[in-house]
Length: 117
Length: 518
Image (tube, rainbow over all chains, first blue to last red; front, side, top):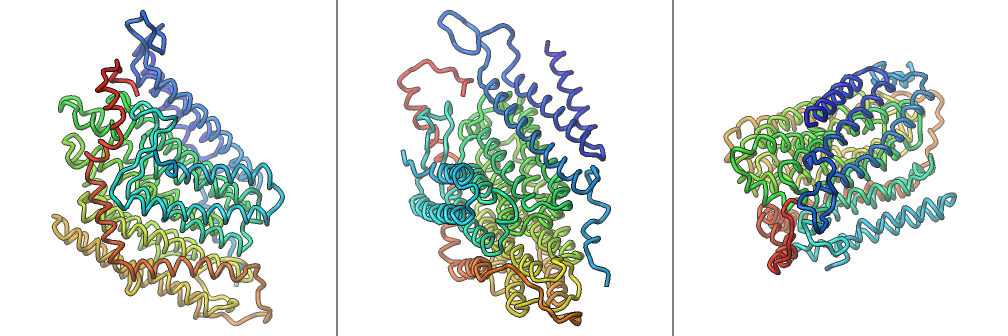
């Protein structure tokens, strides 16, 4: 189980980093999503892996799983969901207004504003 | 419990909700609410600062759950000072946004502005590392909206970069927090301080990784080189009032570094003491050099102001990287100064831009703008402050930093860098100012460019410059307060005792508590 989870986190992170280094916004956003999946699994595992155990102390259970990482993951999921929606909208707006979905600004739109005198 | 501690978080949240739900289409009423809220926040900030001056550390337990089980807000001198600084800056920014008409160029400026303030105040007040993450996200998501306020292709594309960079930073923050939780089993800062100090020497590999990951996150926020790439385009392309408010955003990174790396990973913690300071110092020196060379090489005023902000972060982080009480005092003084000066510079740049025919900000001869002399005087004052020349507080701040590094092994390098980069900055600002204001191109059609700005913009920018002047005049009392602040920052035990007091009282009553639970 540890090996499965660890390699899943590793594969997701590697894919995420590769995709965020791409030139266009769509793969970059996919990469960020991959990274958030990876970090959610990572946070989940930070309370140690416990299978088939209740997340709260009950009267007759000697063992339990740590509930706090589950709360943290829930918060992280909500936040990353909202953030992904925001970045998709801004990237879409940028693409529609400039007809270009490259991430970089290196084609010098700042200088292009200068009037030729 | 002192309920005023949570007021800086609650008030902007409520006002933002009212603005967005009730006052959606009424710009005038929105402005009234936004200004009233910001003025009230200054009042609360002054109240909290006066309260914190007694040296007492106040803890606000949300839901009355004692730390480390619940989330706490902690008010000490440092957080009270940062809250007041942000509130003062926010008033100048909101007045400028109203006076220049920036708030009418898109929707929801005031609502997003209040949400941004809520996030900033929360980040300054929280005593919980995960809560710090949440407030970072609150201020970031509001800043994404503010960054693209008014729209435009270039601004949107700069906004995409900004959002992507900060999303990666947030992911890194979560990785760091997960690692910390896996090692210590807590995320409350005071509880973390206790547990990290108690870690056996054989078990420090993970916590060292976590400490460095966390430093990277804060370095992204503080625009430490090589993690500064988001800053120049963002600050240059953001609407001017937003760029001015962002002047405090980089300081949140600096604040978080001061807070975490004195309290949790302090210089007395053997596991991490030997690596944070040297890395930070090296990065800060390079940041200062790159920032000031950027000032010299900038082709646009917006870029100039952005690189000046990077350079000032370099100076600030040099002082922080020493982690001595005297250096932190100098850093805090320079932090107040550079927040105000950086914001003033961004506002002056926008005043130039609004009055030009093409609304550009190139550092090149153009026909003389309306009120050329007055704006040149404002630019002059902001440039003097930013470059750190006498008589304004930038000079005193740099002097304090130079004095604080006197006993450091690398004193010659730090002195040479700060003094040489100051000269470079002076030349850069002088070049930009004389090209923009003195080297006036002949007018083509003799029609002065119309501009929508009212006198309120001069009040707002002048207010920031007046605040810098006040900081210079009252440097004595301010530094006395700041040295008490940094003494309190280094007094870990009283912070820990204040936060964990209630939990210990319960433990004494022998209630069964699981040590690994938060």
